[in-house]
Image (tube, rainbow over all chains, first blue to last red; front, side, top):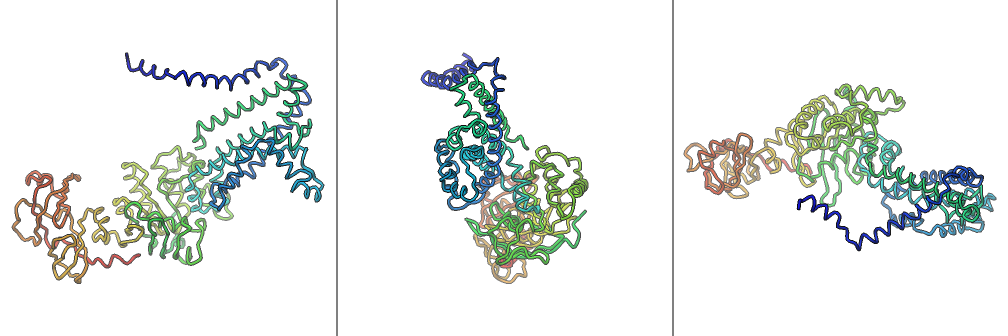
Length: 272
Length: 364
């Protein structure tokens, strides 16, 4: 027997007691998606997506998810920087609080938002008294709910990128006369850009798929708060084909996001 | 293109940087137009001194005066971006997302100057150093030797008062480093500011520096011109680097009682007291029998290590005193020298350089 044949034998020798559950796991993950694709009314897809309700949901989802991503970037990058660079008392507590929305059931997040920003909430009540503005059940509420669940993804990804960066580049920049702001904008942020892009993409995908916090805090009003996932949920009752068509769109977006991030992860040095 | 005279200034001060193992302390007096090399074993605190001067060690205390400008004193600490330094890092730290010319231009901003003007001046600098063709490459696309040049130009293009180089050639392979070393020596000669460089490579220090500062365990143990330090080392570290035997002992008239045992007769005008005696390994002769002749110092020992060094052979012979001796390969064969055999050694009194041990301890 040659060495190569022996090698092949060892490679093929996956124990049965591992192979069977592994195959079931794979099937379990894949079959629902296959079911979705099989049930998709491909011929009528464009027509279904062209309907008024789906169009509204698409438009609303794009606007709110992009707004949430933008807010997460503007607020999340500074917080990520502080978590990565400033050693302060209670930093691990802050990190736990930041990560909490990642594991919190979204419906609990929505309830919490309602408790804080609702008409009788600790911030919502004074806000209404002072300005007359009420947040719940508005498009703004959708953006707030999506930001709440999406921002942690951005923060942990950017924090990781900042920790992974060689800080001596920042020292080198300061010996070249760069102020702290110049170091941040010309050196630090460009060098962690791949991490920021990955974090923003993850956050955007999470915002796009947000359901629980949105329906709790913003409700399900077509044209105002009914995003794609909410539309899928509603249409399942009335127009199953349209629901499936929208689901396929969301699935497609997720596949694209995954492929884009895979590219990112496979070539971490692409920026250099 | 060189830093002009009004840019240059002298540097003086004393620093202390707390470290877990020991504090790094240094008293410095540097002259513009001169190059000082800090040498010493790994972990001696050499780089820490450079970083403290550049303002990269916020925990540093002490006083630092550069020209008529105070960089650091009691309760005052100038941030790095305001200090006029050019820092060449061991691994260069060229910004990977900026092109070579952008890297150089990064440190050249003057108030009120347009981006295009800065870029043009950066191009001029690259041209002066013969690397204009690299201008639009990214640091990841150029060789180690080229990156070293870019790092030097980036530091010099700021026209700094103080140029700091941390192991500037350590990241290069031996061949490249020898070539770049000569170039660097030339560039440093032309620079009219203060230059301080850290190296663990004695040849680098000798080729590049006018003055040497020897550090050990965070303290400066010797400082002086290259000739002073290399001829009269105060530490076995430098003595070994320079290939010298360094023996400490007590001088009384013309005799030194050596610390490790044994005695040397010397010709010296030194005051009695603690002294160092340094002997070149080639000044000691080896014999199989007790030598006749004029040499005043004759002793026996056992051959320990034998090592080929270029065209000579270095013997380690355990006395007392224990010494390193350089002989020719022919002598090794002729005398039948192998590890473990007993030999006689002799050295003339005039070959032993004697100097006071106390004059070398005043820098900490």
